[in-house]
Amino acid sequence: MTAVYITIDTEYSAGFAKAEGVHLREENFARSIACDTPTGSVGTTYQMDVFDAHGLRGVFFVDPMPALVWGIESITDIVEPILMRGHDVQLHVHTEWLELAGDANPVGSRTGDNIADFEFEDQLAILDYARDVLVAAGAPPPTAFRAGNYGANDVTLRALSELGIGYDTSHPPGIPDGACEISLSSNDRQPLEHEGVIAVPIGCVANFGQDYRHAQITALSAWELLAAIRHAKANGFPSYTVVSHSFELLSRDRSQINHIIQKRFERFCAGLEAMPGVYSATFTGTPPQPATTIDPDAILPLSEVRSGLRLAEQALANLMYGTN
Image (cartoon, rainbow, N blue to C red):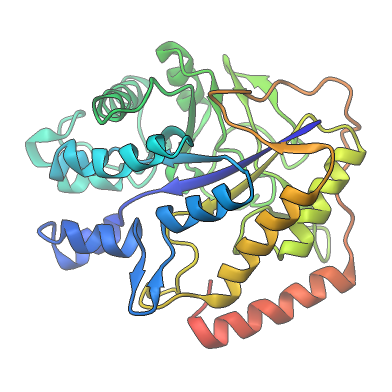
């Protein structure tokens, strides 16, 4: 059986708070977590509805840093419904919130866009604060972490190990030019021990040229995602990790439902339910284990038909709903 981790980065928008003001917490929640629109809501509650309809479990990486501005209740409002529905809550951190924290900043006046911008002691203090808030909001002590913007480095992993958080899933082999500074390469595509924790890479597929493309709901079609998981199963992968966000089924300006991405998410969940030999897993229940016998070159090869249709679908979505 191949474990599939459907991970949802669940976060208020720091950008919206900076641009529009910290007094708009409820509106930020409506835009980023509930994802309310005049024609319906497609945020975490809807995502859990789809998971439940197909017998799947999601892993919600929740960012507690907005508690610096709004208090623990702002995080409890996210965590409680997820736990009540039986899904997994793990730790996510966007350090952009430190700019808004004032005297509550756990590292004094220091700020940075990504956790990798900080030295070890500061990273330790930030992660310790975020973990404590998440637990105070009702979550079990987290066992897994993903950095906001994937912006972790090896220091982050050492800090996680110091805090007893044994899994990091901030390495995206399909985004080699992103914010991640962990000393792993695009060839490191299976869980492995690194800097005292188990690094769990984001799934990816071969793309046009010599590139890879990451396994995210807005980045790959349902056909590509399901083909990647069938390939993982056929090649004996112990696990495969897919990424989404609490707000991912909205248009870029978060004013309306992106029905193309919404249907993609629904098709993916339905296809995963129907696929033999795989199951949706959580870090709490069945955490990933390092792969030992996988062909390091094994990756879903490029299908010009599959990927070409995705490009056409993306172009239509961008035209109708803004660029994703």
